[in-house]
Image (cartoon, rainbow, N blue to C red; front, side, top):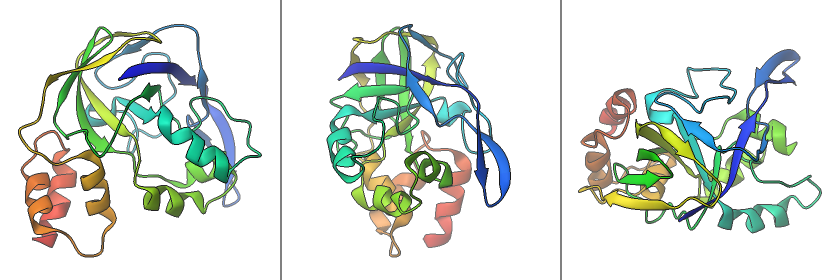
Length: 210
């Protein structure tokens, strides 16, 4: 896997349901390296820390391979890397293979795969279409958040190399589908609940399905 683009966002004012709010989803490519810190990416905009940033969402990765699919659906948008609010656009990122809990060397940083991105209305605002939320969920390739075990610099062209694969086979894509499925697969549920790479609150919520 390889870093295709490093992206940062400025605070951007939007109007939602008649009210003004701020967002950091408008990310664009930058020429400088990104510094991945423990709770966020230095220099990036994190507006609502209830849902963004923090230990289990320190940085968001999205696959370059998914762009053609979405460009075909939204051909009139002004396309660039960072469209999905990702800090790092990665070539070769495959959520059907990435195991939650696996550890990678990413540039100078050491990171752990944590959880998929669950879309909110701000993605709909950027795309000018709230229907993208359902389309994004149905497509099943949500990108992934990472936990930063060792902070470090990431530059365009850096590789993302496996250091230690999670002993649990639960993938980002499996967990994503589990979150949104009406009937929960019991084996996947158990794997998720027992996986310490997922936030405790998320694992506790899943226990109601067991």
